Picture (cartoon, rainbow, N blue to C red):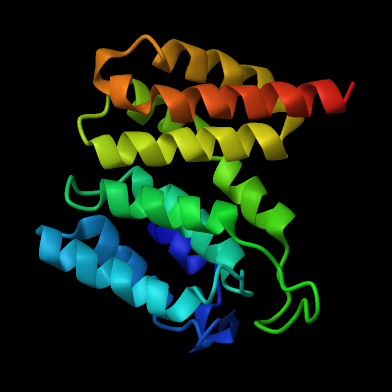
Length: 190
């Protein structure tokens, strides 16, 4: 994770609320959090820098990449928070009227970074013990399948298999809707 965090010049990136210099430390603290309170504090620091009304900022791409790397070193207390932040980025948009309002940013580049975590999302969906983590993975698998045609059929396959998991009985509607959306996207691309 340190290599990935060191790859970015955080102080030069614009967040939704100013510069993103504090993100490197916040990501490290999020991954290493020893308590739920510490994890929530670190996640809150990330949110305050990066998120504004669902709009992406210049730091969003680096943040997505850093969060994917955080998944490999996460504490139990931070898993669902990391996945939730990734899900928020995957649902983010660029302001149509002022695309660079929070610095130059690309939703496609954000999703390219998020897609690098696809195997982790699948494993957490299948074997995870935290239901919030598992539901965030449903969203992430859906968004990966929508943004990357190479992952579309895999996404459908994994979400269909998740329908059989007893622990996800209460999420069948979301799973079914996600599968339907992926199939519609596949049909529209043919």
